[in-house]
Image 1 (cartoon, rainbow, N blue to C red):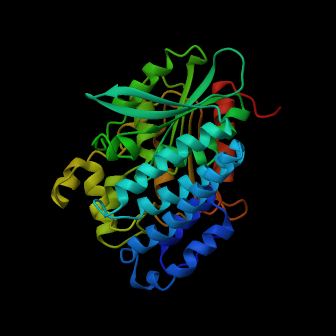
Image 2 (cartoon, rainbow, N blue to C red; image 1 turned 180 degrees about the vertical axis):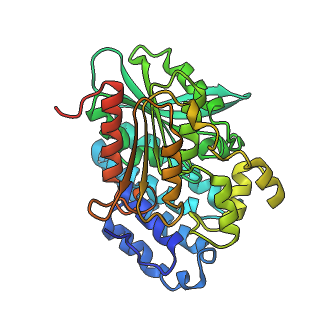
Length: 386
């Protein structure tokens, strides 16, 4: 199984693949990328404004079509279009350099279309805001259709994803079928926390993850003894770190091992491995609130799980794509090897036989969705069949 690669560079192709896996439609995507193919010849950083313009144009059209549906009282149809507009807005926005013209407006459109789209679709989703360090962090609580207190999984972003993308990717739906609630969060350094609150990333993910556990413990529909955590991409640092230092988590998983992300930065400076977004160094400076490269390296120095994973004393799953072009599969083996005190540890490498071989399953996320959802069903007391 291979990544869909209409462009000559990995970063643009990755964005297209993410959009497809988050609900984009191939006909619309073909229309958006057709006028961009010549622009892509100049490299990943050039032409990103043109990229956003095409994706915003399609999203705007879908919003207009949704308004026509609403005028006829067709809320379900409108909701479908608005959710699809959301992923197109977000795909265009995440390709931009920090401070680029139109980026803030595009992000605002994405938040609005997502809120309206999920409302009109009748999705079992609640926006949650909690205080954190004098500001606010936001999550999306997806309620499973179950009786009584049930398990819940906290699901966090990577370096450049957003909670809406986490939800649109289908993992909360997969968990809900198994009787498990999901809380998709914009942690510091991502989504609203970064863009609207100015909260920068921290290696010490237990600081914000514990706040979400506090909130979940107040919810009658959540069993406080059956809370798990996972994260995608750079969440492969944040989730294991949080589970190591927050003893209330009962199970954990990493969707893509990021065992030593600080070391990955050294490799990227040596031009080893692919970057996830254009204008990469500017992006990570923004995420970590760094003024320059030296400051960034200092602030990201503890993005390293060595010496921490032996603290995990609950079941933990590490997954990785066999041919991940961003993060070496070697890091998955390192994380697994260091889970020495987990009573049930598992390593799952997705291979060409099944798919999901690219970074966090960009070629096919369905295998990761199902495998990790089954893991939580097994370890938190959900169910894997009807």
